[in-house]
Image (cartoon, rainbow, N blue to C red):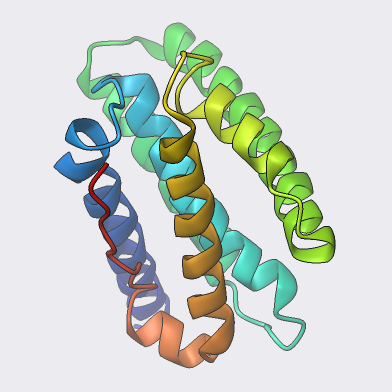
Length: 179
């Protein structure tokens, strides 16, 4: 019963990540390509914000972070299977996803640390340009919007307790800016 309750919380947090990552705002206002790869990157970006909260919360003894990771990758695998990929192809794709995930987490972590410790957002802008926009020539204001979005959500989560964040399913701030 307890395990099911934890998984239910993780499911709600993950569904919140997926819901915000599918927001039309990202594709219409921020000119993101509506593709599997971009949706994957937005899920990773939002998951990173939650994982960063747990990383910086030294009081956390929760298994939510690991359970969220497990749930997220189980969902990726299920989606690949639903798309018709067989076992061998799924295994190859999952290895690529895991490598991409850890690579992005490392990039975001380094970028956020530079921003938080030195006030320098240039690496985060570059990271966002490479991961979210795939290096496209995009208006700098849009990458700055993502920098602010990440920073505001990180600060929001850090200013709340772990219990509040979990009870709110890590509700992301929904601020929209017109360009």
